[in-house]
Length: 252
Image (tube, rainbow, N blue to C red):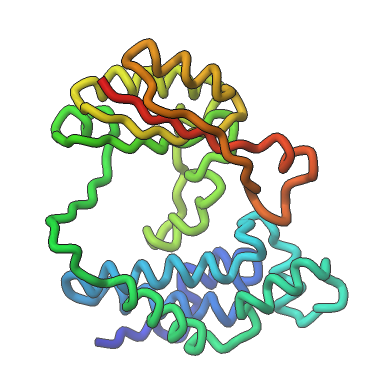
């Protein structure tokens, strides 16, 4: 099935051309999103997944705020750009033809489609309401980390493309200064799950603090912190040195 988005500028081109993606890629995305939305059944969601990957691939080092760099790429001003960004954008294929990029991503998406012999479900909604209506043996919690970038604001252009309209998302309380209090409330709702596996960032709480919080509800089986780089290429050396992923497993 094919849908033509007409001769005029579509939504992506009108709002994000040469800001979030180059004009060439914006025009391709406008037509591609129309085709994806018109596709039947599971094919629609697979096509939308491909386009999400496409948009991420177009962003220099995954940074949705680097708009000058996109303008430079659109104008072919490669020598004026930071060489680290140039290398990253060339690896991502920003200068490639849109169809070639989509074909690469199509193969990747198709390789991820397989049966694991289980019934799998995906839900979107309020996490506290969701936990009240499901059962399970193991609950893995990976909430937004306190005092870090909020996905709903950092990725707002992508959400707008998926919606086909400008969006004004509300910042998650998990990402704010009271994030650990939200985590505590989440644990209170999760009491009936026998095993918890929790991953969290250390911007607001360290491993000892997270262990102390979880121990208010049940014994700890294991806890460790792992050094990792957040926002590769964008964060400073001191930020990279401080970053830790906190992992805790607990059971009643």
